[in-house]
Length: 214
Length: 214
Image 1 (cartoon, chains in turn red, purple):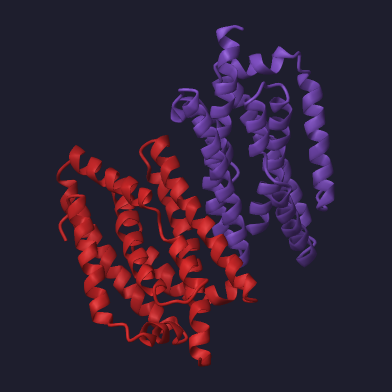
Image 2 (tube, chains in turn red, cyan):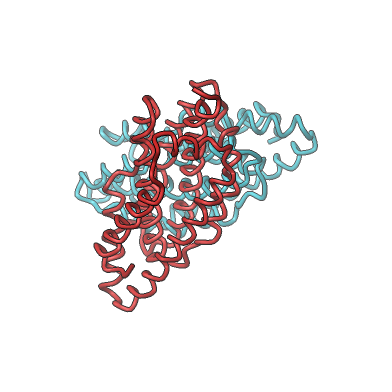
């Protein structure tokens, strides 16, 4: 096994760990947009769950003799730019971002995890979001559209922007990466165009499920 | 038992639950002030722990047939004003706020919990902060003073302001309250001046322990 592919799982854990830390930060801030205390608490709990995941990943990295902050650092700028360019202006945008963005990330990580050895495979699998998060966000989107059907159009455009920014982010991550993730993806001859088609098709199904146009 | 004292534990759980929700929100925001990823993650984890506590309290309220948001609502303005008037400007102020503010709240809650029946007593006891939080904050304050001894003076003044604002908050909470907490405190003939002396003396010991002047 080359030095390059030995790096791969550690780099991936660093990327995911920083993603969790950032997701926590942004969800916690977005919770302030909630229209009432119940919803605010719900989004705060989703945020807190990201930190639980962060801790698992950081512990694994520490057990491997790697300082978490060291492997997270290369991805800071790439991931922050995504959040900076997709700051929700209100509650429906906040829950749409949670619904669309987290699911695409999870789908991608799920595909990657299948190609990893244990314990990485199980660990990445564990930090994927539980379905109740998507259910909460989906219910909030449907409620917003029911209250005002015109919201559907605005949220559809917002979701397309989120996907566009997520793709730009993927490009930035690939550029920031030490080549390890690329090596990982190509190790098993992963068909990147096929992966993108798969992610896109699942995204379209999710959009339709909450009444948004892809 | 009068209707008033039946309300008391539920009101107290509502107050503490909203306190947890707000502490989460502010700690998550303060984590952005961290000078590096390791410290940022550490403060984010403290924030996430508050949400774990919030969930326990909310579950207990729900089990009692009470909507958490309903009993939290009366305390929203009183508790928010404290945080609005004590927004840290930098990392040393953020950790000092965590160190000073959380400890006073915990001391107060600990005293109140002793006067409650089960399951309230155990529940309130469970949500008091673990000592590792205070240890993290204390280590950060000591490190800041070691880097620049002049910081001690500024943080001492900041801590005094925090205590002053916390006392104003206590007055606002008492005013917002339906009289239930007051009933609870007076039930066992609690000596309020003695309680304040006790809280003040523990606060002074904590300040001295990190090199701050009371």
